[in-house]
Length: 497
Image (cartoon, rainbow, N blue to C red; front, top):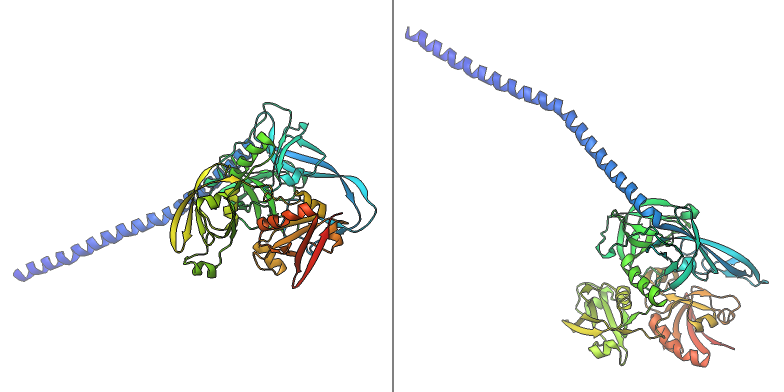
């Protein structure tokens, strides 16, 4: 009897766990089946969310284009030109930088009888005031005899050129109209790399064309397009005819003015440059008020830092601008700047290179007090400087200086890109960008691509030194250049009649 009782208990013990195990397995199996059924539903939900997000972004682009488009205009220019024969390119493969239909270097012509004809050009612009002020590029309207503006609604107006600034490539137009659509101006200091932007303009005359991309980089300088560079780089497709059009953020604000593209084909290759709208604002205010731009002046000669120089001055990175010379009785001299100082901060902003500092100083209104941080003998020092007005001799604008015009000569800073292209070293001189046909410079054998290393026996490393060395020639009408063509050097003396 006792034996039978034990068997019953053992049987109960064995059966119960099995039932429990079976129940647990059933529940797990059910859960797995539910999960397997739910997985496709979850995936479909995620796919739909992605589509919805893309549709929202697409709708945002459409809304921005609808909002900004009416303020974007088509700019058509007309000018009388004289040609002397077939085109002679200064570079066999063309310049890598294209001003949307105008080569970076002027085209030159062989000797033939002059032939006058009207040349038409086109670009873009955008309205910044209800009473008709319009922004565009200087190179769009430079030397124009007549400027017409066509609005998005089809109306056409003759435009007056209020002012131009070749050094930054900004121009202001005015039409006689009222209650016009206006494109708000944003804050280009707040934009970020990777941010979505739209380029709106008239590429190849195709009005109201919108392209989309991102901000690829900020603070691009040393490109060799203008004298003062702080470009926004974008991959939004821009082409000839986009010049002067706006680069717009998703708030519908202009954050830049489309100016140039990097190209080896003449068309879009994924890299475009826009002038930051904050720079444009400063220049525009002066052009509307006075018709010209007055730039700030510090009074120093500066050079780039490379890795070896940085180590020699005890710096971890080659960032900043090395002071090599301080002009007498200049703002820098009065503030105590000395040769050998490395300027690393200007008015609270880090200084990465020479071009960045030049632009910062130039955009500072004369009379403004700023704090400049320098590294002197390994120690940091803060100096207060009252920015002066840039002397006329230093306000050297390419193609605008009267003496250079008489010589028939156009010069540009030697950027790292141009130095590499022509086989020169950085800071070795200034490069000849153009020579007018039948000019004294042409008769003396000067050609685009040559490097000017000395002016009147004075070594020149940059545009400022070039301007100072050229000053005495304006009085005498004579100039002596030491020029270099690749590996060959020679002196060239030019006398104006």
